[in-house]
Image (cartoon, rainbow, N blue to C red; front, side, top):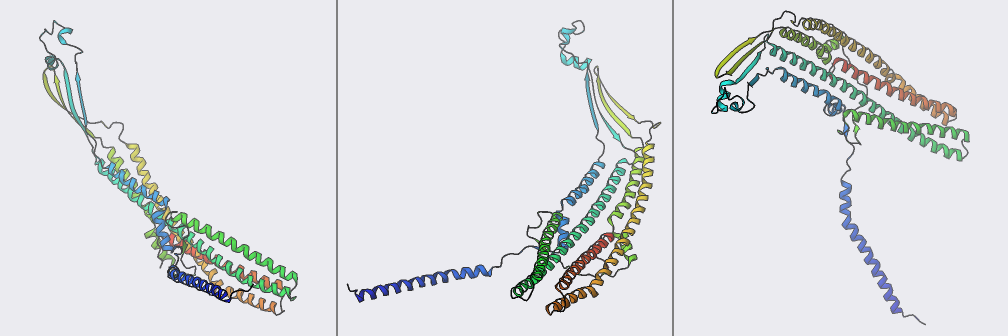
Length: 453
């Protein structure tokens, strides 16, 4: 049976039409969605929040829960100032005596005839008293109480400021730990990437017969060490960021935050005597010790004022058997035995105690600055040794060993040993740099200021 050529041509034409229609639909769909895709691609995905050291410190001062709890002690002390400045309350008293339990006429008809009313009985036969008394404090007790409370508040403010100083150092130290962890992670990343390339080339060389299997296995084992170091560096970085976040206030930064500070050498030229003088002027713990002397003195003055006897004045109105009367009286304790002499003596010795503690705090400030300054100088010398010579020596030794190994002038073990020495030197330098930066923060804490000369 013969096929009709015309029918075949029609079928082929219809197939071409369907193909062309499908292509046009795809093109239109791509054209319609392309602007959306381009618009989406043009909008960059938000990256993690990066904070500087100064921002981290400010976040901690605003959100650290331990510090916020300590700051409430200032408010508590201010509330005690209000209480200390209050005057004594007056005392009101009243009584009504000889009230009948029934009708006076029914109880005693002989004294109280039938027409005798209850009102007449209350007026003629009962006693009513009403009075007001007030304690007049002598010796300016209220003023001394207020002064003592204000001195305690001033000392509390300094103690809270010292908590802020300690928190600032802790945040800065942990921030440096994050920088160290990220620097170690960066070094581990470069080591893995570089040695992975070496391993790939060595595998090709081994398969081509240009390297022994033993040498290739040694290279693979070295790669394993670098990969293990990388994973440990990732863990150390995550833990350091989490510890820092806890200090800043867990809710103050997002989960994927990061730090943005430089991890670099910051030389400091400062005079020890100038730093010690600055610390004497700025350390809040020393200021708190000085205010403790003032507070102890105000407590002594208060106890002496308490030794002054107060006066109680009373005004009384009485109604007795139809007679109205007013009574005034004043009472004063006689200071024969209790003159508050024990508390006065105790607070006088407390002044001496506070003075000795102030001297000890001053000595501690000078010692802290000296120790921090010496530690900074020692760490500075170590960092300078690495930067001036040994970093270059380790890098050059690795390059020479690698070149010699590749050209048959050194063994594989010599080259791998140079690789390990280079990495150990780099890590040791980073740790020395972190120790130096921590010592610098320690000096800032010892002086009590963020800006050093």
